[in-house]
Image (cartoon, rainbow, N blue to C red; front, side, top):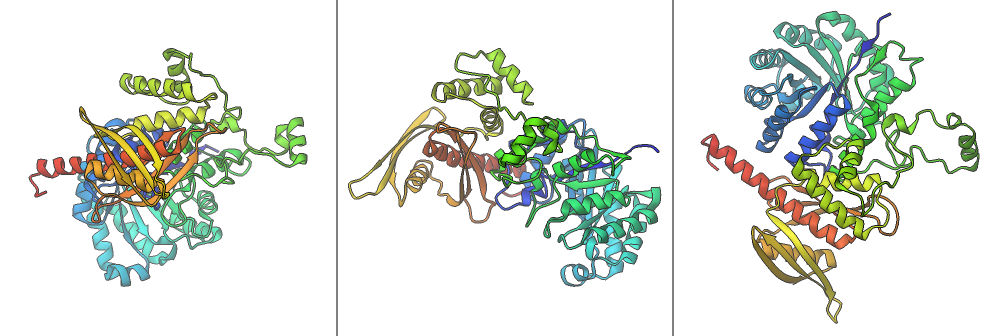
Length: 519
């Protein structure tokens, strides 16, 4: 029997970004897309082109960079959405439009307020129009998990005839159990036969996203939609790393299936996305959690010393994890050794980014005794994904007045001008951020603040993530800051968010002007 390839459709940049607090700027999205390509993802859903000019811009730039994976944009079943998607992915070597409309009675009656016939007509029109931009069109029956199977057959016939090559059956609210998903997929795959690939997109509201995806594969699905670290709205999506490693580890069950994923890039992908989004996988998260390969029990440790297979079904090396977290670089290391180490960690930097990262590494090496792989990942990721530095932190000085009121003195460079000011706040962080507001003239509203230790030790790097709203009518912006000193990292994160906001505002203005629209 021949081996069948299960296509991996990654939607980290679209559905994953819908996780609360997971918004990313264009540079961050490009770096994630490049890593997903290195991971071996078949289809990268780069975003929702019609959602915002920022999404359109990011998808367009990803389409220009990615060559080995198909680049996809989501689109509702409307001409405007489909056109935006087609234009955004126009320069991709391999491209797909993913259009959808709800097919459950609940959604059609209360959300769409459309009859089944109207829904079919809208779906057919969307697929036909999408075919004017691409040959590869995916159609999704939104809320398939609660849709009538007869109606899904009817609409699938119509969109396949219109040119759809993939039919996706999302369990949009994570409601179904594995045997129910299996039955649905089996019926639909036997019905469509070789006319279209059956895909699944399982949400994790009941913690069954991965189980449902694997059951779907066993019953005829040949594409699985998922995200790194299980990111996604509400309880998230089926986790790519869990699906792929289950297929690989349980070859006795999934005998005739394989994926194109390079599993050694799983851990680097997980760390990159956790660093960028500020959302760390739970410690006991399967495959990529920090405790996934930790053994504390004396009985377990004894077994591990005798034979790792007594308590490990997956080798850490299989997912690209070096359990030694080996220190190989120090303040006397040269540029060539630094570049070589980054290459082993999966980073290929242009000369400017390499030089900037090396300079930051040398500064860090003077302050931190032990530099670990995760330190380097965080440092380089921060450098590669930074927005243009409109404002740059020069120095920060903190003090308390005699009455206990925290104050901050901040010096910032804008272009060639250095600006210094001071301010007070209800706390140290508040004082820092308010002073930056005074200098920049932009008042930010802090919505979230997180501090994570990048590695270990009392001199560990602090990775601070902030979520800031600079305008009530626009999405909140994520900023990141790295430093051994948490307060300095916090100031850098806030300035990073401000730079991203100003960069995006400038990009939006340029796009509107270029298209002769009113700003």
